[in-house]
Image 1 (tube, helix red, strand yellow):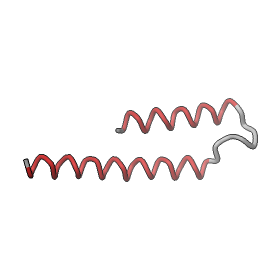
Image 2 (image 1 turned 90 degrees about the vertical axis):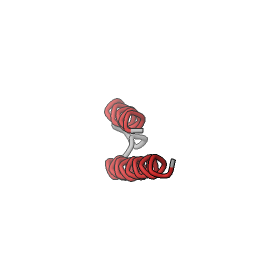
Image 3 (image 1 turned 135 degrees about the vertical axis):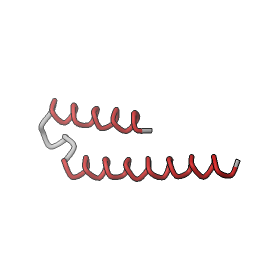
Length: 55
């Protein structure tokens, strides 16, 4: 999950550098994306732990 998130963020930031026009991704959106993936990862870890306990 982390690899996927970093890959996506890397893609966003590189496309951001390539065309610094109105079409580029705003930093705020990048921040929201990072926070979203961080929460998603925490959820995935919690889910994995709960699965291990129950099985």
